Image 1 (spheres, rainbow, N blue to C red):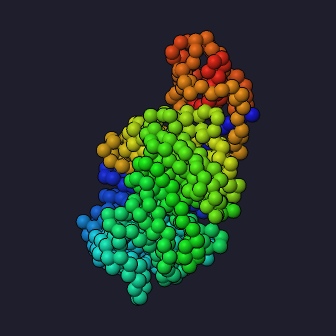
Image 2 (image 1 turned 180 degrees about the vertical axis):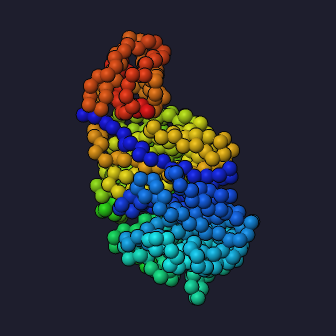
Length: 557
């Protein structure tokens, strides 16, 4: 039996000497990639030999389409003529016929929302207004809508259902926010410091409904993820502090955070009425970043929890986990919120890791992106797969099967900060990841891309593709007791692999993907150094015998 990791097939980096960020990804069945975010100055959005420059007046929205080979199809800009107003692309989604939807923010200025030769103006009325626009499959404007209020309206996540209805969630504050982008008005007031919203637009961009949670200042809520099932039910997740009423209707379903921030999960009908609401909490701040549904409408969440005991079962049962200092989780519930399983990564390691985005495929397999700050075991089961952060924060991408067992994990690494922003599944086996990075250079597999500034003072963006087709993912069974004292690093490794925490004179064996022993050595007391220069890049299993009895999956670049 064997284990392999997917191959990074390409990576595309974009940026200038200023901060530029990609915030959201979508992918179609052909493997075309769509992205949005914001940029400054002039950016060449052609990652290959050509040049396709877009110039921002200050901070402008970009909308980008790449083909499944990483080549540019087109790039669009949304911005004002002002040199002081910022326009931000926050989320992007597709409908079944290939129309493209983008949501974000505009500042106090007049913005041309038509990325083509025509014009369609929206004028910001507050410090930050929300927008939603629809483009056809070639990037031409279909419609653009605006949500106005006196302060800040931020769409954070978006999904489009099979009928072409648009579902948005995010946060807002202030009184008299008009959530109807048409000629009518639907005024909603923020009761706390920051309140969350969920809204639905029909395929023409007209308001179907909008809801919010209610709390009193200084409390807050923030909706961070949204998904829709085949029946039109809407699922959201996010964070809240204090006591919050999670029923958007006339009823009351109060949830009180244990301390700091807790997680909420909410299911609404297709017309915005509450089905159920749950919370996850403990001492310290818990956070849910991403939500996805499988084909049976099972719910997958990812996020993080702090160093105190956290009950990750939102119902009457208990699933207590402790982190040090902050670990990531993947949680599976059924459509009625019943607990299925939870998997955590990072326990016992002195590092900070956080789940950012999550997706599922037709088989119910789970794909997620996260970041980590140190070496950790990212196998939530009885085996071990140690990965290490080269810089301050690196990107982790991993796959679990529908039962929560680790299938593979890989990283994007640099010497400073690399933070994932989104993950999407496209053509068969295609896993697409976006991240923003400070490092002068980042590497994944045999691919290296460079920060446009040449240093670490500004943020550039990267979009990369993993090919996970035809991977054998089962592992040799370890019948020994895993010793937490045995540590293997760095992972991924190159010319040398280090093993500590074993007794002297234990046998170490390194097995390749076919189960063949490719290296044998005896341990020394303290630290054992293995010369791996002659080994080909790929996945290996390292096994130690004797008292430690450790087994770990390790990767060589």
